[in-house]
Image (cartoon, rainbow, N blue to C red; front, side, top):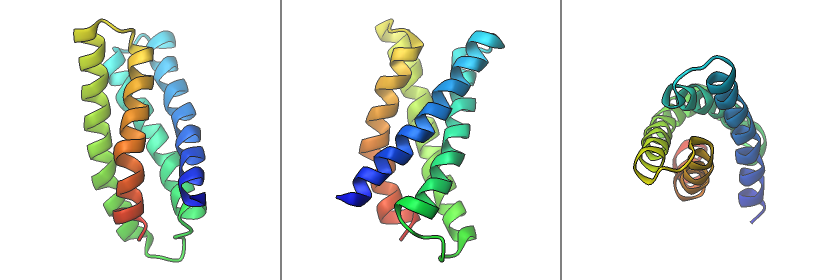
Length: 123
């Protein structure tokens, strides 16, 4: 249970970076929300990897190159799911992209990211 809680703290930290980056891209630099979401997801992914490796799963003694490779595979899945989800919820359900990002990120984070990191990336 402690690993799950730590993973959620790491996920929340990465999500804060993700959301702030997305908002700066879209609100300050007027970047299309889909591209802003990709940039935010990238920034959050980097934070999440480092926290997962060093704190959540205690896997810093394992080969970082293998972990990065596996994390990128999982992260691409996350990026596709999140980007598609944000687009679909925003475009078809007419939900504000910020709320869409929150809904989709939480769903993907718990239903996909945690399990893939625990069972595939940091083993």
